[in-house]
Length: 262
Image 1: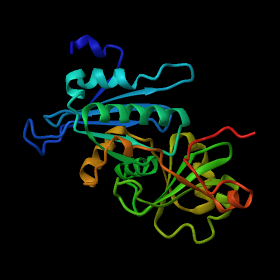
Image 2: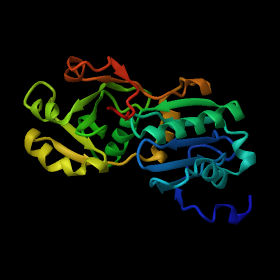
Image 3: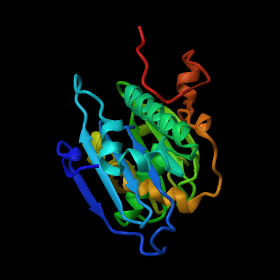
Image 4: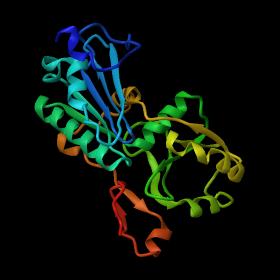
C-alpha cells in the first residue's frame, strides 16, 4: 500500500515486541469501540505495532475498516491470524460496529478471535498507570447509572471479573460503607466519569485512577489466553442488573448496552 493511503489517519508507533524473530510473530488486529474513542491496532509479522485512534462525534462516519487497511494493507489483512475485540459493556452503536468489523475480518481471513471486556481493558490501563490491589471499575451507562465491575485478576481473558452489574449511582454511593470495598481496592474511572473522582474518594477513602481504554493493551490477550474461537464467538458482553433494578421490574440481564426507555 502506498504511503498516501493513511494520509487521513494519525498513527502512533508502539514498541516492537522484541521477543520473536522476524516472521515469527502472529499477525493481529485489535479493535476497541466501547467509548467515543474508536481504535484499531495492528501487529505485523516482525512484531512491530501501530495504533490508530479517532474521537467519534455524532454524524461522523465510522472508519474502522479504512483504518485497518491503512495500518496493515489489504494483503496482510487477508492473512491476519488473530482478531482481538473489546466486547463492552459500552457504546451501543460503537460496540455493534466494532464487533461487526472484527467478525468480518476474522471470517474473511479464517482467523481466531479473543474477546476482552471493556472493564478488563480499563483495568489493564489502570495497572499500567501503577494501580495496586483489587480493582473496582466504573463505566458510564444510561442516565445516573454506571456499570460496576470487580476485577478478580490481571488477566485479559473475558470475563475476568467477579461480576459486572448496572447500578444506580445513588445505590453505589450508599454502599461504600458496606462489604463492597475491601482493603487496598483502587477505584478505576473512565474519563467520562472523572467528575465523580472527588465524591467517590470522599465517600470511600479509596485510591482513584482515571484510565481510558487502549487498543494497544489488547495485545496482552494474545499472551494471557490460549482459548481461541471463531468469528461467531464475538458477541456483546452480558451484564447483570442490580438488585435495585430487578426489584423495580427490570429484566434479569441484558447486553450492557444503553437502550432507549420510555
